Image (cartoon, rainbow, N blue to C red; front, top):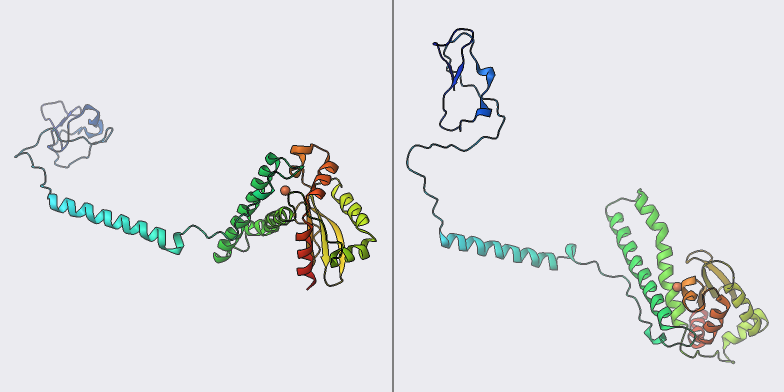
Length: 300
Ligand SMILES: [Fe+2]
């Protein structure tokens, strides 16, 4: 509250600050605009310009207020209720499908049986297994995100478009590695000379040696990718094909019988740039029993 002092000359009346019981007096709070040039008393309360935060009252009349009584029983009950609600929330989070960890669509296969294969160091193989598991993880992630975008109706988004394009790359990176490791075994396994696949190879390429020459030559091409022996059940033909990266060059409707990885990570640890030496080691580790089984399944 501000009043003027009539004893002071008019026009220069100084505003006297009257202590308000709720506001601590502070020199910074003195507002020069409160001066009343007419020296007339005014009861109008003028809110002083706040240059500092409102302080706490220094004086208080009446008895000192007592701290509110806290019922220990009520406090204990409140804590128990909060604990119960927290536990219930945790139970919901762990059991409701909405909050569950997404179910993995694919699990990485274990190919440790290949450790010790002649021509392949354990370091190379273990690094290769780790890389393969990355494709499995990314395939699951891509599938999950695409599923979420579909449910949210975000089909016309760059994320949906780019991830849809990438999905085949991740998936084939996973599946081709599984074909590759599956058609290898320690010491190798020969192709049965009397099998139907042997007969078909001879018919398609003239001889097994010619087929092998073509397969090795395809794998030795510059670039990174895969070499595959495909069987086209529709036309009953065999093809050696180059697959660029993981996703370019596959033959639609054909069954992959033999897969060879010719990415640099498949051999550079043991053979540096000598890809032909790696291919030689791979041929010694081919499991022709598995290749024959794939052919039988595709030819049915
Ligand atoms: Fe690979």
